[in-house]
Length: 69
Image (cartoon, rainbow, N blue to C red; front, side):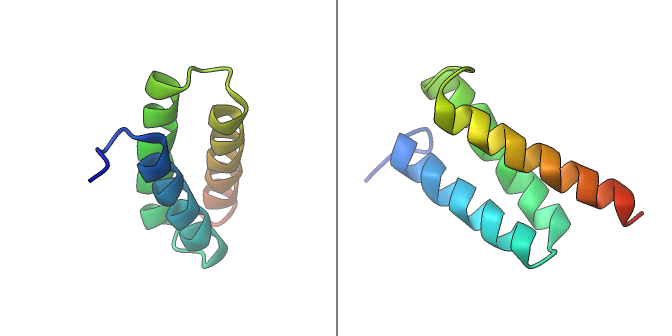
């Protein structure tokens, strides 16, 4: 079994966050983006392209959440 911090596990979390984001399930997406981005930063580093992509999507979600409140 893969651990919680394994890159493949983090990618699954990131993909699920993206799916929730597209479904406008903002709270669920936010939790998962936070989990994935934190894990990516620890495992891959803050400047890794995957980490940066996840943080960009998380930022996009936050902007959408602010617009809807």
